Length: 294
Image 1 (cartoon, rainbow, N blue to C red):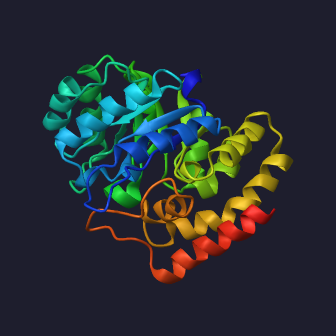
Image 2 (spheres, one colour):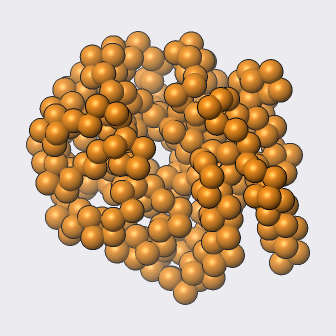
């Protein structure tokens, strides 16, 4: 999965004032991200507000994304759910033929046991020929995928090829990296921790911040891959305040505020998510003014 190392971007879903998917802005954002030098794009991740998209909208977004990208970079498609049977049905019906891989978050809310997680992913993998990248984000799903389960899946299920690790547990990350199969991809799911996680041996990151700062963030990750951590730290230091603003209230409200101030998308979300509070949106404006001076 070399093509999925480096910087991937968990792309937002732009909406217009009527809360409809804004495909013109989506195309503009895709072009901006690719021109920034990222390695691949992830569509329909959590950052894309998938819980409030209909099945028809998801299919249309996948189709549009592949057509607009037109093979310029690989595309990973987010597909997850807490009903294994429904997820398998979606994998067979969604237009994912061109996907480089499927990103699949652990089942949410049900809080399955580790054996339940293993059986879920094993069955899902058996029902598609696509490579599957696990997504461990216990703050959202309510259940951590333990190291032993991750390694069991990595070793026993052929087309489970990697993990986006967003537990925030550095010891867990290091244990995965120490014991993973040689060809098992491990990428960060946390922009603020990406630099130290890369220093521990991760292969890259699936980033939220790179929606707004694709050139800067992808360059920082390239420095990490070249083990030039001095240069990487200089770039990361400039972005740290942006990370803090982006994730203080909600993702993707934070990054959408940045993108709206950059005139790339409108600052629209679907309930139950709402735009950033005024004081944080003001902080976005101040950060961008200062950042653009340097």
